[in-house]
Length: 109
Figure (cartoon, rainbow, N blue to C red):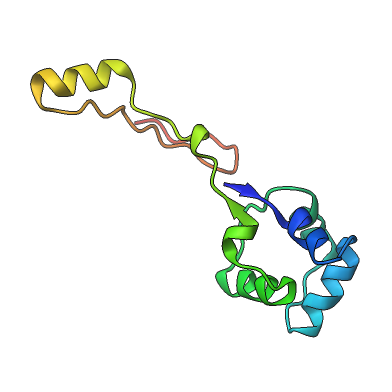
């Protein structure tokens, strides 16, 4: 998904993150400067649905204006898996290797 906040805000006449931040606060959504910067200039890592509702109300838009699907980035199964499924009737599922998010290694198995 492509995050399209800046263009949607610009279409409504909001050109600065601080303007949007004030408008959101008036509607009960208080966002820190750091999080607002992330929303404004990048792709949010996470966003609560109720916060998304407030953003849509403030900008007078729909969710489809803020989130644009990027279908070309969706991975398709490898050709080998498709061929094997067609010949054997079973799908090859790659092994899942757990990874920690904090950078530490996993205990030995």
